[in-house]
Image 1 (spheres, rainbow, N blue to C red):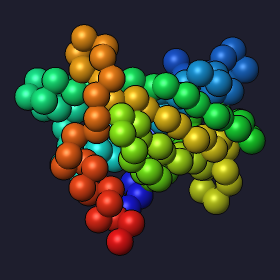
Image 2: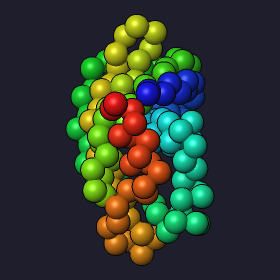
Image 3: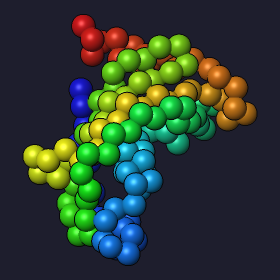
Image 4: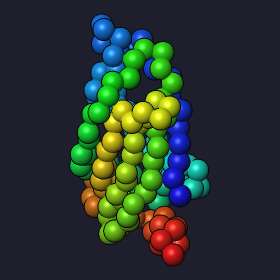
Length: 133
């Protein structure tokens, strides 16, 4: 399953030339992953409060292909590729219409609120395995 999140580019997202500042794509992708998990029924606030589980960005491989501009409507595509141990691998793409702007391979670590690694919650692991079947 994949997810799509529309994002409007505001002035605050851009540099003085009206081009989206590169780090803001990470924010847009974070929102995409959060909404993806929410669509699957995994509220991060619930996981944190009831299962002592939080997620932290561990690694990113981002390819900036084309810029987005002030007032553009972009779409963040998110797909969970693999869940293994304490890690979740995502593929994400930011597009404007049919034009790819940014592509990313994202690794998220699962941990306790104290920062200790922990396995991905069983329900999420079970879902990811069901998706592969």
